[in-house]
Length: 428
Image (cartoon, rainbow, N blue to C red; front, side):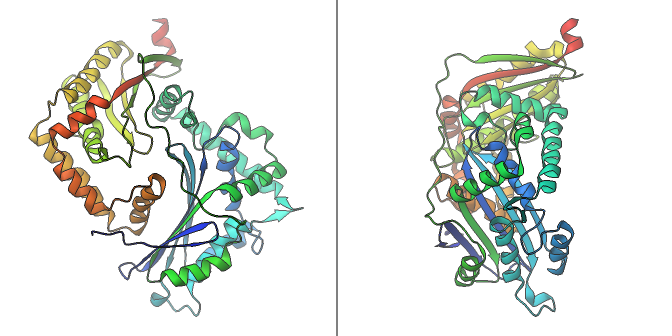
């Protein structure tokens, strides 16, 4: 694949991306709505899709809304909320079968886009604001989601490390918002925030299936009642931040196992030429079971219950997570730092190179079997302004050698060490 399979157009403020293909028996539909991460909007934005999923003006009752999905031959509908770079993204997804494979007398693609358009732009209201019972119920739902992060200490430590590392940046905010904001949200205030969100969000509608750009454009222009305006490019996040000395942050909670996390500034983003080598760097460091962290910290030294690294290429941040006994903090920290130094020194074997290339390459090739995965990959280009096909990325990864990875390693800076320890361990 030497060119993107998506055809592009625009209707009003919404960009259209259509992949005409007969490979799949369903239509995969994704709508991305993104705004900058900000304290003033993050919780309202996170709560909005929970309320929107409850019903539309034409089917305001949740049961009727679900029956409408069932009438689309069991169409799958859902949403995700996440952050990429310094943007908060709400993604709506619909998966509906192609008319050819069922005895439908109407276009299921048209019906699905009509439904999605109503969900996003024509929600169920009472007295010109969101229904109070829906807002109250979904506030509880979001509250439980946020509390679940606190109860899952692995996720909690990962989020706290990022929050400390990016304490002066929008990236410190969780995509699901803040617990302390929820009590003040009312049906009226949320609807006002929704109208602002709908008028400001970057909107990208993706459709993959046996259709055409012209058909999708015609349908989308009728079904999405959007405020006027033109779509603009996403604002690129700040990738490089000055690091003087790494900060160490220790927090004490009721946990039986310590969580040692580290935040690294890679100073490389998705749009940079060094991004393929950065993928290799993360894979060799801690992305896979053959990685340095897994083998040296967990297997050889038996210091960690888990040890891995994770990359957000749009923000240029790599994080290391490990679960350790509190008494092993100094030794585990020492061995982790030794792995960072070994990467800078180019102590990378041919086996590590070949295994990492194979793992990344397989992931990218398997992505071609899923319409939603192909959509998600293409959306990276919209976020970053850098168009890169899966085949091009595979080729770049195959050609990335030790010297390329060392150039990446030399740019990586340790920013924050976060340690979550138990109360009993502190008292001991």
